[in-house]
Image (cartoon, rainbow, N blue to C red; front, side, top):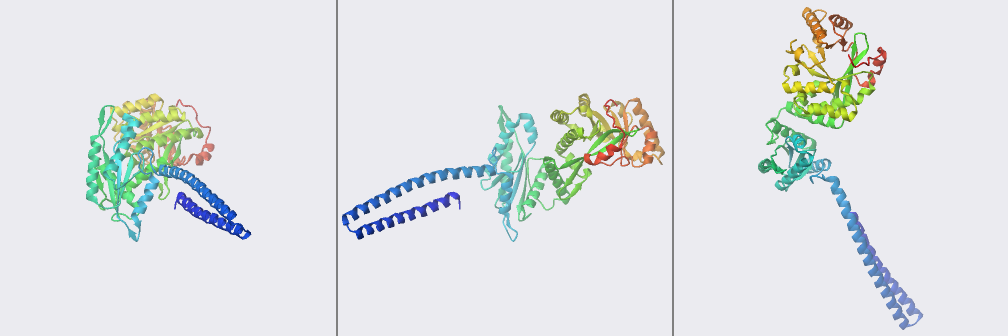
Length: 510
């Protein structure tokens, strides 16, 4: 029962009680006067009491109407506040939290499950639309999408799960009807939205899962619908996929990692650990920033598991931006002149990479000269003219560029003359083989001589023993990194290591 109904019922009871009270008072007064004597006076007193009773009732009615009107206004304000808390202001779709609660209610109890269909809709290339036409146009597209969904699915509940991610909850498992309406949605989106006298065509990837056929819990149903959505994207986008139990556990795992990683980046739940790089004289030269992901349920997930998945999507751009921003925020707390960060070959394929570097530097007030961008040998061998141009632009901004894991691919010595690089990091497999492998010794010595001629810094990776360090120095390497020196760790845990070294090198010229 609402507050308005409760007070209204209470007012009615008070009104009736007041009437009875006044009538009883009038009769009591009349009886008293009659007993004293005087019928005329009794009639006058009775009339007075009845008139007073009537005036009181009229006053009460007017007061009650005023109260009811004010209560209705308050109730309307309360309903509007609740609606705003549950509804997305832009599109009118239900907010994520309330929508997920409705999904759980729609599925029923475990012993008495109900039929329902969860449909996920994700606009294709929405970020590019925003970048190309601006955010006002992006907002127009989202409103158009939701209104179209509401028109095609009048029996469904529409929720906004994220920026361009929406969901539809249907209280049935009518797959043919859902398929027909999804195809109609795709058709309307392809017809496009008019903007600045131009028609911009749209598309959306759609995934669906059924309850209780596929899952009876809201989280599991959401995961399976999302996996179906992922299949739509992988198959070329702009289509509907209904979850199939034939989808492999491997695909489910990859999609789980992608969604969880996206949330971890958004919620700032990742960590950046640092591994020192020292000079030949034992002073500190730099640190390499290495991203770590400590999942709340699965524990520490290694980069080898989540970075390749991020590289298959544009998520690598978001991850790379997080790493660079974290390094910019941390560098003033580290007694080093530079931080090295790893750059994926996928990041280098887009101009957004260079734009991101400049944007983060401006936002954090840092200088590009304090950072080294590490690219893999594989990225170097497949570098297009556009990629080389982006690397040259980064160097012009003040960044240094290092070629990482050299010796693991097919990057010959001739590449070193044309690549825009400032340093070479020799792969650990060569450094750890120097003691017994003559080929490794010849390779490292030749590389250090070439680097000396071209004035490149040579970093020996994977230094795990005192012997590795001594042989790498003898071969001509001038920077060293590995477990023998220090393991990667959060900046606070490296404080004791920093204090144990000689005075850190501060010059930026080397």
